[in-house]
Image 1 (cartoon, rainbow, N blue to C red):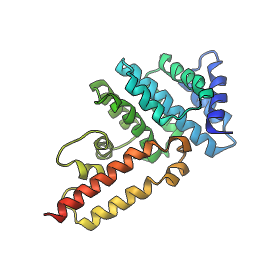
Image 2: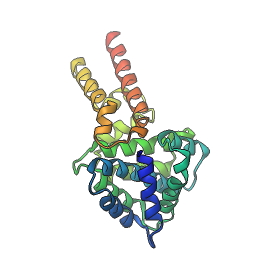
Image 3: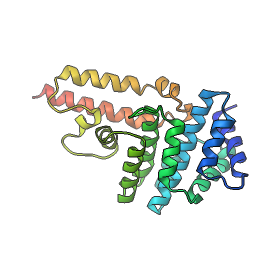
Image 4: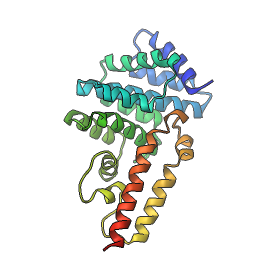
Length: 239
């Protein structure tokens, strides 16, 4: 049974409850999948991505076709489960609870409890991927994403590195992408680059709970890391 079959069963159960607010959703993930921690992590990640995407759409007030397509790039949902995913999306969008409450509960459900948790970074990266789909990140989306990062305990320097993978920050961009100060010896740059590539290997992502179907989230991340490293390497070679 795939992640989508299990997720579909779960969404159908939650959607039929009387209130189905964020507290109900989080508690349902904990209890329904209590006997399988690995599956619980994968379902929790999926629920967090869907729910926070809905909250971002509500905060921005507009859902463009580009954003819908970006959502579908991340969520390669079988046709048989499309309706269930839409039900959870709509449930989160209608819920009177604010996005900050959702983010806090999802961080508690998905996160490691430590600052700069990689799984929460995966969620934030997915939200950036959707937000930038129409060609720019709107002001309200930017405020939303920055606040999500704060709730996820992603520090400012780390947030700027994530942001720089999606938005061109100018001359310092490749160094910001790698999260390393300009002027560091090239050996340190290379060491940092290799660690980032290792941390974002598909096997690592799956091990921390990212479902197989969502590996596409990492594609733009790795591409940005490679491009930043190559830019720095070329610059130092010709200095």
